[in-house]
Image (cartoon, rainbow over all chains, first blue to last red):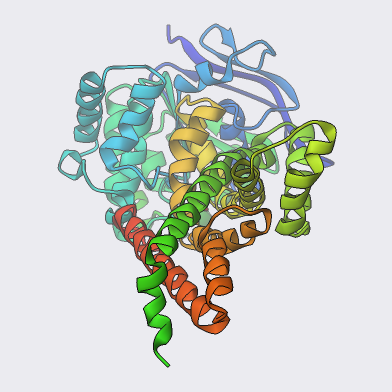
Length: 255
Length: 225
């Protein structure tokens, strides 16, 4: 019986009168890779930012394992250690080397010794294939390499779940593959992942479930096979068809 | 015509002593200004509402009134309510408090430019707000501020010249004394100007050096989205 890691109930987020999403329910089980798709401006990124408490939802609850992280007395900094976040624009610490980026949380949050932090950070860099770039600064790395450092930085904290906010959208096409490959490997290793992306090839191949969001609602969710081949709603079919045309033509032909 | 060069021989010792005091005033004023300015900048960007307003008001007052007025209030005014400073202490205070307002503005600009994106990145790995400020935002913001902030030491060094008005024995005071002794105002002040100029050149070279040394590899102009 799979254990839910993340449980979202009745979540609502508004900015003033503007409702971003409303009464949202979502459960993520241990080891699952969930891909969220949908047109831009439908609250996918805001949902991720609510989950790691970078913004506060207006209503509803989120549980991480058995802890309600939306509770008032919950220590945000404590929660965020357990939720890895990968940003669209990488958001690396530009004044630190790749190693320094990965080490910072280990030394300052986990209070590890310098030696232990270095060892752990090097291990995470090796995991994303960048051990040989440890002493490079972000400005000396390609976009794809920067994003892999971003992934290593989040992984270093040993999170329960990893959130990816359009991790490849800011990358040149030829750099997307290396990032997706790292994510694919993570999923295979059993990491629990919640991914917002337009990469349909990735969604189809790696996702356990695909969630289609539009205008602040979850329209439909299901396995890749259900979503791609037998969607219940015409809107889902239409969106998938359109986005596949744009992004992932090659991969879908083979399935 | 070149007699003023002779003043270096005749008053060299005095000029040197005065220049020493000028440099001291600059260094102390800059240091007070930096510590207080950094506090003001952080208060304005990250403090509670009331502190933001206090910091804003401080900056408005100290940038909006002449330094000379501030100096006279501190040196001549405060003793009336029982707070008396020595001449040098009054000069340090006036220069430091005034410089703080300007330095706060330089720093605040770059703190805002590094801004909320890096804050999110820091918070996302579990750093607290103040940990993120100290380990992530400030190291970048200070570097970003450096080229424009470099105006402040230079400007402050020259501004210190007004403290001779409360009889601090700086380079300007030494110049005034030499001028009175020789009645050659043009020649003496020309010599004094040269000493200031040399100090500014050296300081400028030093600042350029620091700028080069602290540059982040791979980053030309660092901005963050």
